Length: 278
Image 1 (cartoon, one colour):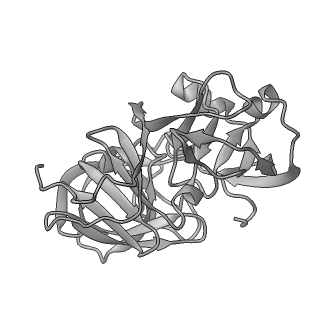
Image 2 (tube, one colour):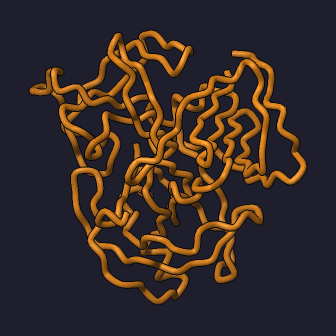
């Protein structure tokens, strides 16, 4: 499951990485339901808040329920476009918070995340969006359950290097699906599936309407595909097939279930590189 929000266009075994731990900031996380949950602290909270690391969200998000519980003054009303739906939110919602002493953004989109909380069977207070990755080197260590913010690092010869491009509201990388030319797909830690792909030639008449990559019911069918991330090939992998773009101008997304197959995944937004360690 994933939840993407944009603000009216404002929006196997390999050698480890050899980065020095000196100066690296670490955030512990838990994998629940295929999603990355992080504990967030703020001066106005007695207990840690539950956030999801969601690289597919255009901006970081704060749950409206949490805003009210914290007694924060709501920001200006704004229209919000989600997957297959529109809603109302508030921008910019000012909120100061940290995750294991790592400073987060101070501007959030305040919106109702009650449906996401219900789907996760856990109150989701917010999302750490793509703005967290901007200008940073962010490494997700799935083996150690740590998110690291690095000053620099040096990759091993076994690490796969992919291009990373910033789209209008997300980070994209190239994926070769079947024998087609490589296409730009959103790298989305907020999606619990492996791959979601747009293919208008698919058969969708019998596809059920279901919660797929958004909280709104959308039609998709599932199949198995062969695809590649650089030189790393995957065979007979489950994928959701969509008749129309999930996000305008994009051909689908790479979800957290696929990223979690790697030991570590490193986003270097500054240099436009995505590193995958098998």
